[in-house]
Image (cartoon, rainbow, N blue to C red; front, side, top):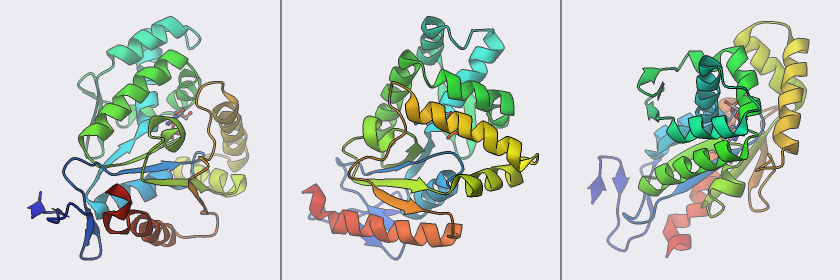
Amino acid sequence: MILDGRAILLASGEFSFRKETCIATEAHKRLIVAIDGPAAAGKSTLARSLARRLGFTYIDSGAMYRAVALWALEAGVGLDDLHRLEQLALAARIEFSGDTIRLNGEDVTAAIREPRVTEAASKVSMAPGVRRAMREEQRRIGSQQSVVMEGRDIGTVVFPDAQVKIYLDADPEVRAGRRAAELGGSAAEVAREMAERDNRDRTRAEAPLTQAPDADYLDSSRLSPTDVEEAILKLVRDRTSNGKEHR
Ligand code: DC
């Protein structure tokens, strides 16, 4: 049976690759591909493309923290006011449609990429109540459809049972160079700010960035986006091995 013109559900309930690109999922078993790693390791490019090729929904969990941070800045909520940050996170209506991200109905796709929001998101994401609210929402999304979700704690905390977990890394200089090329500005300054945010992500008490013990590690420093994508796609195939793990 063909579902949504993309996925094939075999009579046996197994997953199956359709042509070269699509994986079919058994109706009641959603497939979660979790991609974690530090900033500018190539997660977004990989996750977006992988989701397209697999016919899954792509979720950028960092965009959710950015949306809460944007709201906090606009509402004048202190980035250390844990109670009010949690209230905002619980009230935030964050929607993904294609590459557009809406916060409470407003298109915030560009606004959440502003440097002031990048900095604020790094602080807001330390608040346990904010993480709780985001985690619940991420789990709700993953319970309704197969997803490729990228972030910092997807394979460790949000979906510890994800069928595919990838930890995508790259040398700090390579990551800073990529981000500086994207944003413009001095590579040294970008590197310094990124190191600070990396440090916050890795040392925070709640859901720090770390590789899940059962995640596959890939260093993208010397690989092209296409190389990374092909390597991961192969891995997804191996992991799902035609559904054997899901019986
Ligand atoms: O991936 P990004 O740079 O857009 O993420 C924005 C911020 O959110 C970043 O400081 C890390 C944080 N984040 C997080 O703590 N947990 C996630 N699952 C995703 C992002």
